[in-house]
Length: 172
Image (cartoon, rainbow, N blue to C red; front, side):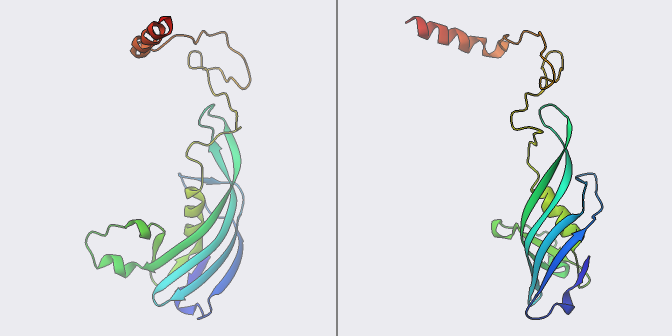
């Protein structure tokens, strides 16, 4: 949905959305995104607050299975006209400006906003199950499905010296 900035009334607007947003290579959306947004305008700034949720397809970081997850997002972003950033050759965002975006041509695209906010709320290391056992480092078997007979008691040769120190300490 496109919001025309100049048409936002002084008291702001509230929007309830259920939209199918196109996926890109960074995130695969499986369901329409549901959002409740409040959009206020203060001078050239546009302040967007609200919530969004949607189902995304992820790969488990331990066992590599594909699974679905519902991602919820709290939205609190301030948009400035893109002409502000064009005035400076190099513009670096400061810590308090990390929730800042830019709009062009008096238009704010809510699809881009929602896609970005959901992507930011995907876990860094998504897990299909909280207690996912992952893959065997020797044979690659999925330890959630099967038990392998691999011996994993080998110690990394770089850490063998530390093991000897522990053994010496326990003898004394």
